[in-house]
Image 1: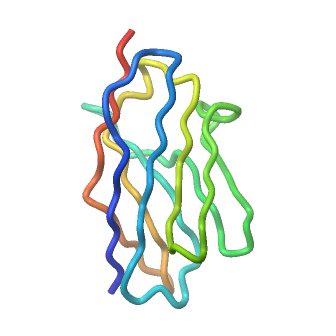
Image 2: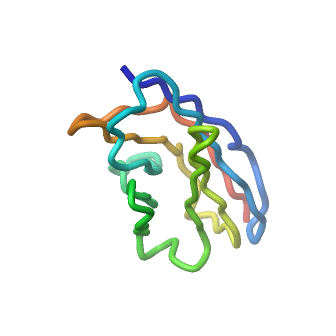
Length: 115
């Protein structure tokens, strides 16, 4: 099993920044990818950013140039640096890990961007 512990959400004004963290513990061998998804009220959960074991990253078009995903292998932690936040970024953000073909999810952290 894999356990994910997210932190770093909160309330910020438009144009501000936040950094989300997700500490991964448990059976970390075989993790293929780590990423962040978000779900706004009334909308489906969507991929925000993902980083693969080889270091390749991909981003949703809506966050390219504003968000950066990174990881610290020594700390088994993945980060999402969010800059130039917009009200439409408001959502619950979920950490996701893919390990040996299985998805694991964090409990979610609320990000609210005020205009």
